Amino acid sequence: MKRFPLLAPSLAGLLLSSLLMAQDRAPAEKIGYLNLQAAVEAHPGFSWIREIQAQAQAELKPLQEQLQTLESKVFLGNPSQEDQQAYRAIQEKLQQTSQKWAERQNIALSPITQEVGQVLVRVAQQQGFGLVFDQGIAAQSGLVVYASSELDLTPAVLAGLTKR
Image (cartoon, rainbow, N blue to C red; front, top):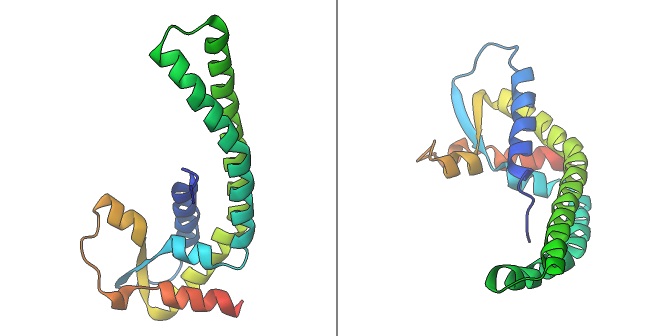
């Protein structure tokens, strides 16, 4: 399934804001990690996000196909003025439509990520964690090269989400 490019930064930003608000206690010494994407996708409300993604794909796919067809005319041959104008118009429509769906997804994701963040803060505080990394971002950035599975808060957060 194609993901929207703003999903990871949005999730990370919302999670960070939740963690920063919870820093009113004495600092804990443990550092942990969370598979944030798995936690968000396990949330009961995430089915609505999947529906939004399906609707977006249904609207975007024909535009992508039209653009691809015109690209071969515009870049491989001697395109007519009409082909160039059509290409630019479809390219602009595709960009606007992608942005519209990304905004809708981010609005729908906001309460989900806030709830995941609240559960994470509660779990981290209960278990004495002072810092929690997003597993995906830490792995992608190379920030963390090894972490014991004992430091994984994902199962506890998933359990906390099902209790709500």
